[in-house]
Image (cartoon, rainbow, N blue to C red):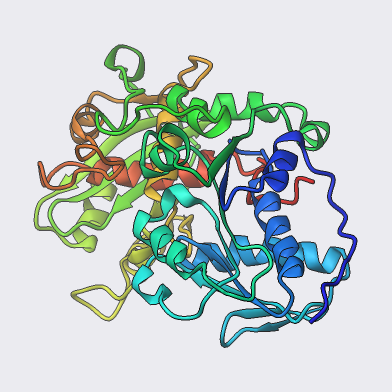
Length: 428
């Protein structure tokens, strides 16, 4: 098939242009939030599909939901905006470019043993730092289509410490590798649309997370305390409920102990008033203890927690949230459920909590009653596994449950839902 040229509307930022211009066989685009990584990834995939007419390439992401909701959505948005004809086979997850006859295989790469098979002309991966190195190596081995005009493997990512991506692309690159590092404040399109973009994130994130996610710095954030922003002197103080405001009840449905926190929100400030931690208890018993302490709150109760609480209760035909709903309604108390259909990532929950404890502007907007002993222990003791970004849940079985419950509340109520970023909307 003859090579076809088509004009695609794309005004690349300086770092995006360097990425597209790179002739390296394996190239990467490392950038903070708002640097246009998704745009760079998909534009490169489209370009390579035209440079390799009739050949197959692969576009991947760490998980299927991310592939469907982010990578594929960004790709089809660009194609439709530019009126580029394509055909989408949902059953096989294959997008065919009608101009060139090229195929783009859309694949999650969490099970990288499935990546054997068809020879590829090119491949591109989204969020490489959340992908195992084995997936990248598998795809390197598949980059062997003898009829390809331009064989290339590429990826985009946000820094995540000194991991395998940093070592492979930045610290010790071998011949044929090149990484482009985007700078913060470079995206003029974003700043024209949201001038206070960086100030808003500075107020939402703790210092380390801000430097990594927003400034694009490579930091040694692996290991150590998870809730590093917590300071007893600044975050712990005596608190009393404010009459008339809703009580925010955050739950973690761990079997033993069953943990929950009761809080209120005053403008941007979160006040954790009390914790209810019961050993070998049922959801009904937890509700009864809540009523014993707080009666029938005139402002009602807003419930937060793990999405799995919507699953059937282990000891009845109802769900945990169903039990809570029926309990409060029987007492004439207004109850609302602020529970997502699927859980946020642990990373997002932790970042949101740290940002409320103390943000990058050194502002404190969460206070905890000294009665919340389990939560305070979590803040001071929960750590990451050695040389990992995974929270260590094996060291002490009592740890993480209270802070997990709080994380669901903070993520639901206090995340910067107005932020425009890689996944929020098209930046350029």
